[in-house]
Structures are given as structure tokens and as C-alpha cells.
Image (cartoon, rainbow, N blue to C red; front, side, top):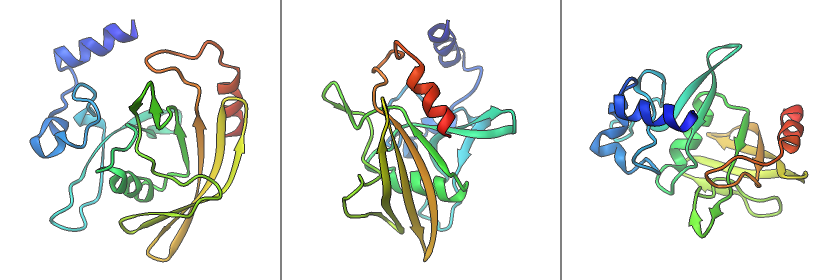
Length: 182
């Protein structure tokens, strides 16, 4: 049913995706058929004329309102800075990553964070370091430090590493464990 609805939304254009289809934004989309809906897309602040407000991300409704969560694609090499801009601008404190960097030989997500014990990573004006890392059954819990213009914020990353590509996990026990930790 979910696949049918997804196809229906794409073909019927019930929810337009005009901004994601624009020529200047196409290179910021991992997949040409997975675009943010215009009515609920996340918009980045434009602090200069050469920056765009586009990121492939949508707000998701929750019990705390229409913008309770953000769903986004795994960053591309050319969108990692935009990803961290979004995290900073919307004061995100928890990131849930449900893919590996590589799956079945294909890159699914650009590395946007360092592993514990590695040097910090810098993306544009953002510096990210991994303060702690704990391996659970099917996921890692990391504490990331995000620095921007001499201000530091703590981000908690829950990285589920056993989500099968184009499928769902056979057991939800570890997902429930992860949710309990959030």
C-alpha cells in the first residue's frame, strides 16, 4: 500500500515538487524521483546571494505540531554543508540515520560525521567532532559536537546500521531499544 501511495503522489502531483525539479537543485537530489513536497519542504536561510534555500528535506507532522520532525536524504558530497546548515538553523539535537555509508557497493550517504577517535571534520564553517560512541545491538549512539562561529552545540546521533536496503528489518526489537534511548 505504501509503495502504491508513493507512486500515486509522484504521478498525480497531488503534492507538487517544483522546487526540487528546478535545474539548479537537481544536483542536490540523490534520486530524481524522491523530491521534497513544496508545501512542507525545509527552507534554509539565505545569508548571501550565492547560497540557495534548497535542501532535499521535508517537515513531518508529530504530536508537537506540523514541524515536529525533519526527514531528509543522506547528504551528497555537494550538500553536506547544507545538511549542517539545516541542523544548525533548525536547532536539531537528534539525528537518526537509517542507512550505512555504503550498501551493496553503492554509496548511500556521504560521511558527514567523524567516528570516535578520528580527527574532527570541517565542512565550510562547521566543525564536527565525535565525543562519544557506543555500539548497541544494531545501532550506534554517538555524541557529536558541532561548532559554528565559536558557538558549540551537542548533537546526539542514532545510527541504525542494519536496515536492509529497499526493505524493512525482520525484527523491531532494536528499533524500539533505540527509540527508548531517545
